[in-house]
Image (cartoon, rainbow, N blue to C red; front, side):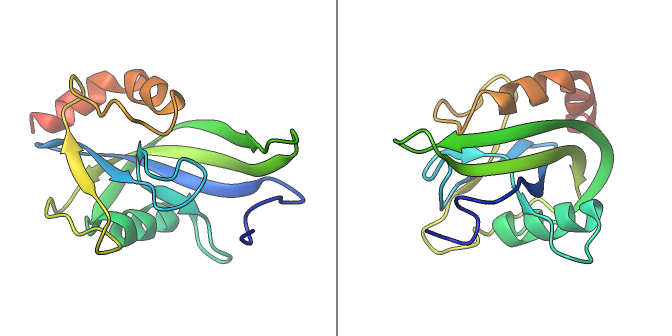
Length: 148
């Protein structure tokens, strides 16, 4: 059990749809929930940190990419139940659209994977369907950023 499993209350976090000419930035998750699956970068907001600062830090830590937060996209609950139907994870995630300032990637861990994906060719093994909904909600902005 880690410090984020079986929480007493939802844990605030952020996620980033980071876009460059190469596409949308994804990283394979290295821990539950969704361990081993592709997801947009993000994580928990630290005490004393704004959400925008959290987006920048999380993206840089997980992918090696620097980004600029452009706009708020939406909020989602990520709730995972264990085999006994107890809440194992509950994150309250605010998602943002961001423009990549750098494009060279560097995974957080030596065995980690990071990649740029065109919106028409997203990875099949994604952490959850909410990511696709978020991407589709800002697809025009994503395509515009890719063409800049």
